[in-house]
Image (cartoon, rainbow, N blue to C red; front, top):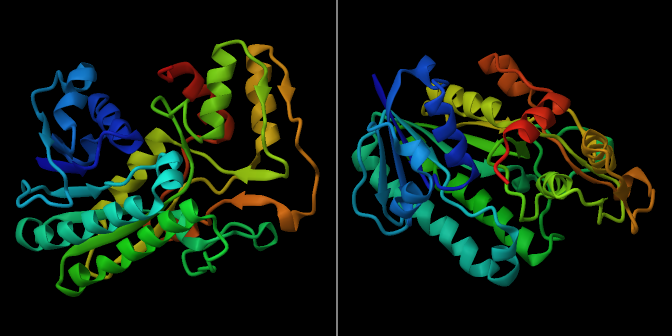
Length: 320
């Protein structure tokens, strides 16, 4: 039997793993024990008691940027970073430092506690910089300049790029490590009050409000469902080794933001408003879609949920 350690597991990723564990979706990896480490893990356990009915789930309060010890685990998912865009708007330098410090300290701990573990660092598709629609879904080998990003996006992208670099010494020391560059997701724990457009659309729909698209140009995203996310990350962890492979994690099926809004509106019998939207050239499109050929070919991974199935399941299960 195996132990899974989630570092920074009180956000979307952590909830997806806890939910998957409660439904037996981690049994292919023989996970019978799960430990959550986060700054306010015990408070999280009190507000999410349904996750912690299983006595094999433990919550440990700790700031990974300054902890001195960690439990051993067969699998480690390092997801310690906020995805709340507002934090990067108001204090980008602080958030960048938080991410990098959390990784730096974990690197020291891993060499003591996780030499035999299989470790996945959660990075982001933001490391690629601005994607061009004409280039299509972006592969792991293509990195663009991120200097044009707004300060908040730039800080997050740099932090994730630097985090990836910081993991290289672990691989050089023979530890089993992999990097997952994650894109956009849906599922029961999708935030509905942050910068995630799909989540905001769904919240509006449940409130029977007109769904408003604020974008002023074409926007394309692709969405992986939560269960696929967990399955992919565990498979990546299973195959982690000292080669430090990097994999895109997400869907390669681009969906226009207007199409997504209309699909949700139709389900609820609502209308869509897009007061600022202008059809511009494809060069101006906001495009954020991964190529997932590497994960498909090397790890034999694929998507169990397409966009419409992901939307339907999210609406059916989401916590508003």
